[in-house]
Image 1 (cartoon, one colour):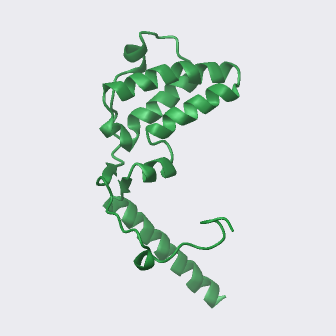
Image 2: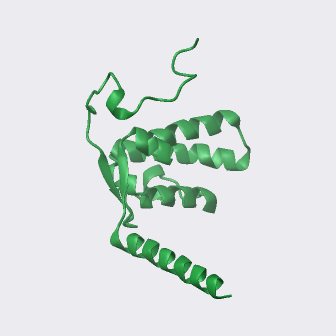
Length: 146
């Protein structure tokens, strides 16, 4: 019988290993701030397609960009060339390389969870969630009256 594949995980209190995390989580704030150098400045090129520019600007506005160092921006500059190549002609090899590098920069929710990056919710988002709940309650009340 293969270990770890045929049963559900034990509750947290019943696990044998209770190692503390080796590092703290990093708070991420979705503040819309633009960080890092312009793509043209970073790559010493000005002929980027709108697609590549949009891809790069998304990274500049991402909350994890607050933690980027010069080496991370240089990595994105190199990746811009790969993204441009994929835009012209799809390549599984290049897509894999882009995915791997973006993963290391925290591109997806799973990548951020592995890196212990936590997106903080601001008060505006909580207020919006409250409005959605209230709207749902109003709809239910209207349906009850019909």
